[in-house]
Each structure stands twice: as structure tokens, then as C-alpha cells.
Amino acid sequence: MMKTEKILRHSNTVRIIHWLVAISSMLLLFSGIGQMPMYKRYNVVLLPGLYWVSDYNITLVIHLIAGAIFGAAILYHIIYHLMQREFSAMPRNGDVGESIIIIKAMLTGKEEPPHDKFLAEQRLAYAAMGLTSLVLLLTGLIKVYKNTGIIILQPDFMTVTTLIHTIATPVFLFLFIAHLGAFIIKENWPLFPSMFSGYVNKKYADHRHPLWDYKKNK
Image (cartoon, rainbow, N blue to C red; front, side, top):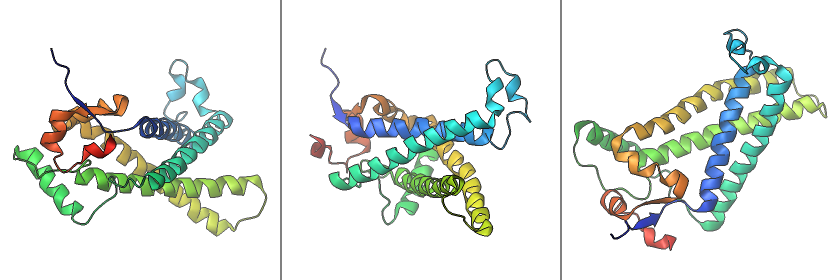
């Protein structure tokens, strides 16, 4: 039998950075919630093996290490795509309107408009998650810098910084869940394996992403 022809969608570098961001962000959310503290209040510490999650010093170390990985991965991601001049995930004019059309098509079973490498809502989600990530990273760095004691920052400035960091956290969590939730939609199922292998079925790419010039990947 002939093997199904595959098309490269994500390079090894892109996949590694994607998973570094994904894993570090989950650790950041987990450790950040632990510093509030929420786990002791809601008896999470009583679960087997999780007695330590209410320890501020432990969650702080996890938060700092995960934050360093998160920041480094984002920085590398930006530099890599600038050097590769690869901006297919960036939002474009008309993406909002096209996203509405795509969602309606998915709900009603009608035919979707032709897509490029990424769908319009994927480009919008990428921008939203990217902006939120940068806000979290910047405010987090300010909070770390303040704790070093090298300089004294104004209390009002730190209050605003902490507030922004706190508000951005549930926003990021919502976007993270929405990103995973996109795979509930059957039309998106063929994209899921590419997060691990990097490849999608050529027949699928030709059918749903006819505007994508995947030959450039070769």
C-alpha cells in the first residue's frame, strides 16, 4: 500500500519552542496559583503527594525557573521567526470578519472559505496569547527585579504592576484553554498530530488550506 503523503507544517525548532512555552506556562500557572495561596484553602494539599504545593518557597522556585524558560523560549521564538521571515501566524486585515464566517460554517456545516497555513481565528488567537504572554513576562520581570533590592520602586507603580500581572493570568488561562478546546472541533483534528510529528496529511492541506504554499517548506 502507498504511504499517505505528508506535508511539513512545523519544523523541529518550532515544535520544541512550542512545547517549552506550553510546559513552562502550565508550571507558571500552577505555581502562581499556589502563591496566592489557593491550594491550602481548597484542601488541594490533602491530595496524595501534593502536601508541598502550599509551600511558598517551593512554588516560588518553580515559578522563577519556569519563568526563565518561558521568557527564553519566547525570545528565541521572536528572533527565529524574524530571521526566517516567517510571519504566517500574524493577524491580517479582515481576520475578525473571516473568523465569524468560519465559526458560522463550522456550526451550520456549510463550506468554509479557503485558508492559508493558519486559519483567521488562529492568527487572532496567536496575537492575543502572544500579547498576554509579553505582558506577563514584562510585569513578572519587574516584580523579580524589585525583589532583588537593587533599586527601590514606587509602591504605587508596583501595585499597578502586580494588578496587571494578576489580571493577565486568568486571561492567559482562558486563551490556553481555548487553544486546547479548538481540537474539539472535528475539522481541526488532523492538525493535532502535527504538534508532535510536525506533519499533516497532504490531502487535508490541499482541501482545507489551498492558499498555503507549503512547497516553500521544502
